[in-house]
Image (cartoon, rainbow over all chains, first blue to last red; front, side):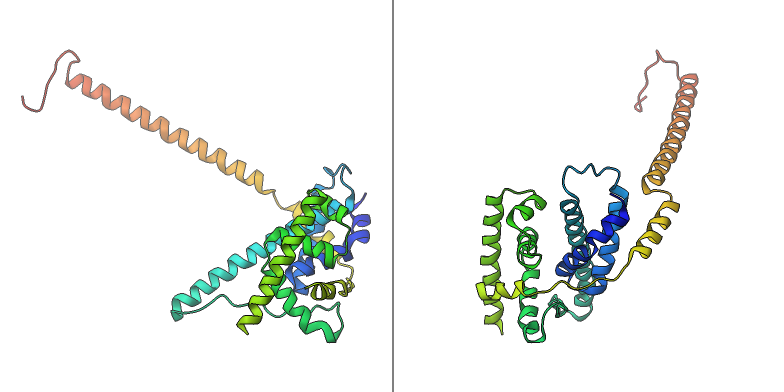
Length: 174
Length: 83
C-alpha cells in the first residue's frame, strides 16, 4: 500500500480521532500530518500483519497522547512561572471545546462531557473514544489496544464509572 | 449516565480537506535533514576521540612524573616526612 492510498483511505478517520483527543481543530490537523509522515517512515516495516486500519489508528492514538503529554507539561511549566510571580494560581480547565460535528442544541452538554473525558486516564479515554465516538466494534478496539475483549469490556466499564464520578463532582462544584 | 453517553453516538464525523501536499513537502524536508542518530553517532565518536587524547596525555604526564621522581629518589630508599 502506498502513502497516497493510505492517506485517501484513512485521512478523515485520522483527523477525527485526533480531534477527539486534542479537541482543537488546528492541533488535530497538525497531528494528522504527523501521523502520515510517521506512517511514511514506517511503511517499509509494515508487513501487513495487522491490517492497515489498526496500524494507522495505533499511530494516531500514540501521536495524539504524546501531543497531549507535551501540551500538559508545557502548560504546567507556564503555570509554575505564573504561580511564582503571583504567589497563587491553579491549573485552569482546558478551553471549552465545541465539537463541530454535533448540532447546536447538544453542543453545551457535549462540551461538559468532553471536559470530563479529558480527565480520564489514558487507556480509559482511548476505550471510550474508540467505542463511543469512533463507533468501532469491541473486537476492532480490542485489536487496536492490544487487549482481550473481556479486558476491554472491563476497561470500558471502569471508564463509565470514572466519567460519572467526574461529572458528579463537577456538578457539585458548580 | 447512559443518556449522556448516547450524546457521544450523535457526534458526526467532521470533513477533512486534502493535506497530502503539505505531508509530501514535510517528508521531502525530512529527507534533506541529516537523521538525528547520525548526528548523535558523530558527536559520540568525536567525544571518544577527544577523551582518548586527554587520557593519553594524562598517562604520558604521569609516566614522566614517575620517572622524574625515580631519578630524584632511588626505589630501594625509603623516606618519610619525619626524616
